[in-house]
Image (cartoon, rainbow, N blue to C red; front, top):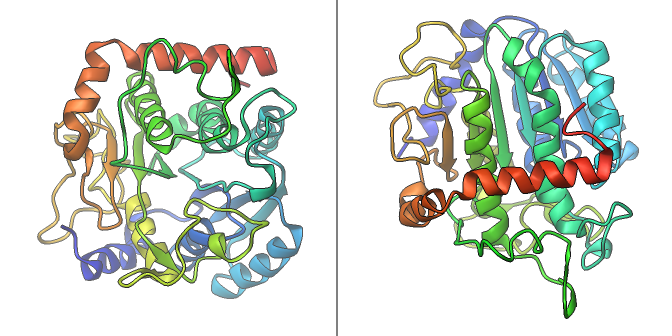
Length: 347
């Protein structure tokens, strides 16, 4: 386990190790873990350029002022969008592509609006799955070329359900995310299946982009999180209020900054490389993390709040899925849905 003090020590070295002008994109950055991690990044970097995407302009105005107070030398841009819609995701990505030639960090925490649960989007995707899975993967696919061009840190962090992966039914899983069974549309979200699809999609992406590291995290119980405070804002964790041992929100932000910047999580082709794309160098007592394929430094990491791999809990499950060719099948299904909705696999 990586201690919190070791994470804090790594975070304080960001300003010395990583160059000025890092470009970061936070999707779901107007509340909760996304907001607090973004503030930690602004606080610990030199002249960062940060884009944050969310629904609430009111929240964004407050956050913008707080970011400027934390680091007046940074550039901060809010993009208002409903990212449950893939067309909106594409619009946001085009905005970023027009302004930036590289992206160093893509941090994904979009939350679910409770009033929309149980319904389909206008793009005929089941709403919770559209926000939690399709939207996030679409952001990654669209911004992958900019991430690959970065000369330093290249990382994707998605905060959801690492370690909760479960078996998928190869006949039914294409129907699961918002498609229709004979009995009608699915009205519940299977978080285990969504977690599985997320991890398998990241494994597929790592094959295409071996110079980018992908971290799927489960943040544990977090208290004081804005993602839980309002039924209108939704969030990654929706049932965490007064839990003994729950993390303070600021601590969750520091822990996730470590996940976003530490060399503990190198890209698939970077574990033995000396180029500074892996992040802040390992401190005393910290080693390279084990990937979802049970190999150290293999590029895709399923971790909990203390930066430890939780893939071992579901290693047999993940291997069964690979043996059944589910990495390829999940990816084919995802691209098929992207093409059905938007007319293209990416923008």
